[in-house]
Image (cartoon, rainbow, N blue to C red; front, side):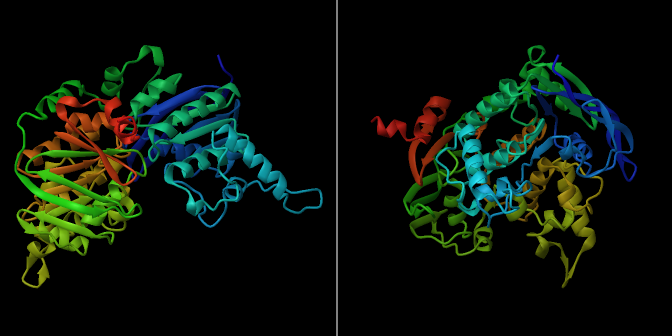
Length: 508
């Protein structure tokens, strides 16, 4: 058995009388990858904040290397060699890669001055370990792609000589290629005796890299298991408290029952921002059209241009037989086109406002009493959508920022569903990004119910199983161009990845 690094004993935490964690006892060891899984709101983030001293637990003790520490004391974890790679990132854009990596541990020479030469050399060595040897340590972070930023976050933790690294959804913004690099990095950390706590909703990654798996549900520890004791179906059942296999199979069987023929949107030569290449495609009534591609393929940029969020040129766009002229996102809503952005925090939710406000924000004119807002109408509309979409919140007046990712996403869907006339076309950009399997299943059901009502869906997703589960056909993009179209009967991950990498066209 590997040497104990971190131990939690009977940790509980309550907020305003509501239990977030109940009697959690867990041990994390050196040289071991310990996966922590559970639905959004299961208590994973609260537990990490307790470990880091950001939150004072109501009860319990924490031990580092066998010694009890003062719980709720900020900085104690880092002093003991425990570091966290946050999902949201903590890099400073205006500083270089090297400066970010050594920001909290600047190297100095014997005269007390910054030793830039030493920091440069050590940065090069760390980047080599991360298979990023081609990156210039002096490059400004603002010029890095999302996958590069994530790997620099990891480099920052490694530079501090950690004993234990906590990775919170580390693959949320990186492509398949970078995921495999990350898996190799984690194996190297294990070889060095460094422990890893791996928090992820992507269960295929958990099974690839974890030694042990701990499951949280509703703030309690369901159990800790060796990977060999577990399979996907059992793990999902432990996480959500019910079996989802039959529900997913039903969704799969619903797809592609009838070929959709009526074209509702025809786009010709829409220039993809950044790449400037023209893209043409059609969307049919009542279909789910998938858009696949690697990170940076231009999928989000394409549809942000279509709805007026980005400026670009288009030769022609016809929507329900009428020329589509969209200058702003408000124009697209008025035309009957809605879009759920990939970045729900920056382009979706109004974080400081309530759940009710976020649901009703684009439907206020239908909730007025004369010139005044009808509060009763607002509350009833929000309550109806909250019940219909199973939005989990203590109160509709709760600020949306306090909801889990899955519930925030359901609020954004409720925003469109509460409109007097539901948009005939919904563009969903990574709608299940960062949410758990239970919330995913609920969002899949919402998407299917919309299609049954005649709504057309454009689904942009980096998860190929998700696209193949839901879509009628999939268009694949590579560097601002559509490189392939795959009908449902042809679906296969290898074929889609060939198009995404442009290997299919390169090989003829």
